[in-house]
Image (tube, rainbow, N blue to C red):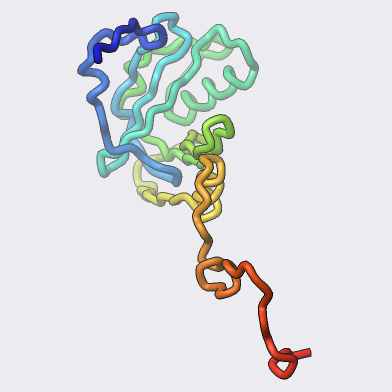
Length: 185
């Protein structure tokens, strides 16, 4: 069967870009260095900061740029740059993205449920200032059993819980016969 079609949503024309895999940071707290700054938005609404920890695992954060549509975007912009040691001449928000390369910080990544997709994704919660001599942090936070259950339920999977497997009466379809002598009451 021949499949025909034309891309409507992706703008990338180099298919090699889709081969990129990578070892990415999950939720947790990590001391990172800015490895790269990417510009993949043709309308220049944001740039992507590529953070990398000492193990070579990465986290990419999209940062909106001026003019901002929301006040929280402007605050996030100034906080991110300030905590990475970029000096702004406020209220002027101008800076050179090359100045971000090799800057250190500690990022705190949190699990966030995307209810539409029924999955947890990792999002940047905040960035802490990291000074030379500070402890290098590498504290991953795996998904909890509750998070995994939520994802299973959202995806229509019904796996029996441990309590169901250990309960001999869980799959009983008839009456449960226990003599009155065996009952504690």
